[in-house]
Each structure stands twice: as structure tokens, then as C-alpha cells.
Image (cartoon, rainbow, N blue to C red):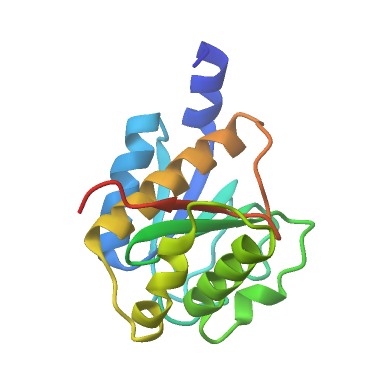
Length: 177
């Protein structure tokens, strides 16, 4: 990483929204990458998100719609039990998906269907995880994996690299439990 990229990461203001376990995991990941201005917001908070460059919001059940009007990139990391996924919504992207009542379940079904339609290898674990996701199961390993993916995406956004954004997504199986 160049010194200019490190400076851009340090200057990037990021808001992290989610449950405490996710916040702890992603805060560590972000700090390791050099992020210094991290605003923590609980999913129960109603405080406005202001002066932010990127928002990372973990949505396990439903969606908070806290970030639907945001005019900055939004990263949605997901715990998919046997792996993790993330959807990036850029300011110019359609934001209807943010108000889906079961966003985690919708995202898992969408990604599994996308992989099946395009015959993408290595996604069987997600299809096999769908019943667990529907039943609300979570995994500490998947949550940490989601935080890791999310932090890497945030760093790429901060330095101006191209990132996949909706309808494209990121998906990764858990390496170890």
C-alpha cells in the first residue's frame, strides 16, 4: 500500500452500524487497515449519520433502513452461517433492497440463485445454508469473515479502487470454524 493510499484510508470517515459482536469484529479489522475516524452506531440508535464517507451496516434480521437515504457508499455484510457475503450499494444505485423485511434471507437467496443461474462453482455451501439462515442461525466464524470482507471493501472504496456493487456481490466460504 502506498503512503498516499494509507493517508486516504486514515482520512476516510466510516460509520459502522450493527450489533456489538459485529461492531467489535469490524472495528478491529478497520483499525488494522489504518482507518482512524470510525463512528459506531448501534442498530437501536436513531442518531443521524453525518459527515461520513462510507457506511458499513450489518443486517442480520430485517433491515434498519437507517442508511437508505445515505448519499455515500453503503456496505452490507452478511453472516451466512457457513460463509459470508457483502453487497455494496453506491449512491447512484437503486436502494429499494434496503427496506426488504428479511434482508439477510433475501440476500442469501438472491446470491444462491445468481450463482446457480450463472453456473458459478464453489457456491453450494450457500445453497445448503439457506435453511439455517431462514431459521435465524448465525456463526461467529461467518460474522468475523463478514467483518473482514467489509473492511477490505471499505479500504478499496477509500483509496478509489473499483468495487463490485449491486447487483454484483462478494461471497466467501468460512475457511475454519
